[in-house]
Each structure stands twice: as C-alpha cells, then as structure tokens.
Length: 320
Image 1 (tube, rainbow, N blue to C red):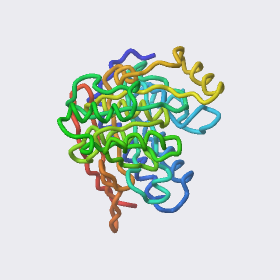
Image 2: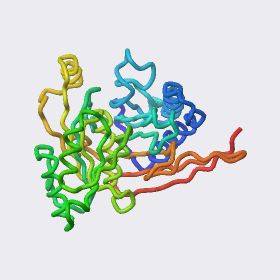
Image 3: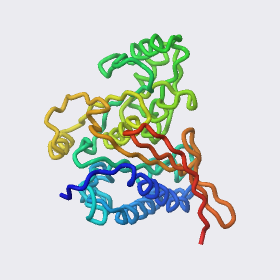
C-alpha cells in the first residue's frame, strides 16, 4: 500500500465530481420506470471518475459482492494506483426506485477516508437510530423502546413528544414501531426508500423538520449515513440484524466477530472522512437535476469531517 498521506482537502473536489457525474448519468432515466438502467448508468459514471483520481482506493461499501455486482463491488480496487490508500463507501444511486418514479430524495452518494477507517458492513440489515447535533451524549439508545426514545429526545429538546418528528422507512417490519411512536403523540415522516437521506435529515432539523431517524435498513447504507453525520454533526448507532445463517456467514467474511455489537457513529467511521452527495430528484436536502435547453444543473453537498465544513455547489454544465 502506498504510504502517501490522506489529503482530504485536495481530494474533496475530485470526490464531488464523482458524485456529480453519477447524477448526470442517471438523469436520462428519471421517471422512465427502469431502475436497473438508472443504477447502471450511475455506476458506470462513478467508476470512470473514481479511476481518474490519484488514489489507491478499495470499495468497502459498494453494490454487493463480486458475483452480484459487475462494477463497484465490495473489494474492488479503484483509482490511478498512485496516491494514498483509501476506503471508499458509495451508493451510485441511492433511491433507484425514487429515480425511476421521479419521487423525492434520490441521491448519488460517496464517502472516502484513510485505509481501514470504515466498518466493512456486510450486505445485511442494520437497526439504526440517529439524532441531530446539539444534544448530550447517549440521551437515546438502541436498547430503549421507541416511545422512550421519543420522550427522552423531547425532554432534551425542551418540548413535548408531540413536537418531535421521526423519520421511518415504510415497511411491514416497522408496523409495531410506527404504532408505538404514534402512541406518544409524535409525528412520523414516512419514506419509501433512501435511508441515507433519511438519517441526514436529522442533522438539519431546522430545515427538514425531522428530529430522529429509527428503524431497519441496509447495513452498507448505515455506514454511509454515519460518514455523513460525522461531517454534519449528530449521533448515530447501528446494530447488525441477521435473518439466517447465510447472512451471518457474510458478516464473518467481512471480519465481524461480535454479531450483537452496537456500533456508535465513530465506530462505524473511525477517522476523518470526506462525503459528497448530489441530488438526482428534488428533495429536502438537495435540489434535483434541472434541465434547461443546452444546460444541465446539479446541486452537490461536499463535506469534510476534519474541518466541519459543509459546502453546497451548483454545477451548470453545457449539454453536448
């Protein structure tokens, strides 16, 4: 491995371009009803751009195992081969269904940190809990019942439970959780897909109106969300959920030995990272791709945990 230092400042704009180009590539598939084509377009563009960066990159969170994903699979090496060794977590199109149906909050998402800095989460479920910045440590926990979490957060915020809004992925497995949260008087913002964006909403509660995220979603997306919160501020916990022995075997292959461990944000992402996300469809965090005659415009969020900087960039590009 190359011993060149991880220069997050120099690499950050290159990472933003990776997210932008993936979003632009998927633009042709917005509202066209073809999830696979939208995802493949984003994957191809993201891979092409990553290979232009001067890094020795390894995809630790990707599109799946090598035999399931032709490109950007877990363990794939990307970059020019010169430069620092880095871990890369990515979702070339977070919200393929959202893109295909032209629904809100589809994003292209990528995070990068020094080699060995990110949890190698297997392709299983993860129980997630997240709140925004400004609260004391550990006022809520995964061990708490959902209603207790709402009450604890309301107390810390100085409001009533009815003033709390929780974001939950709309799935049958969450019916009991949804009922319990509603029993407190709190409101729920249901999302159909895209739980990286769901977690990120907590970090900008004043803008999004969301105070807390909870529920089961993909473990790889959990690591991406932790990278975002490491930059934006906020607390997050994740616990892997296994449905069968095959999923436990995947975890073992990824180096997981304690199947019951609860990971805090900084245990999922242990060192400083850079994070970039570009809006594909309009959402509460980012504007989606805008087409005009002769131009395409994107909005990208570029963040560095080392400095706490959050940069929003508008990229107006002539179409060929």
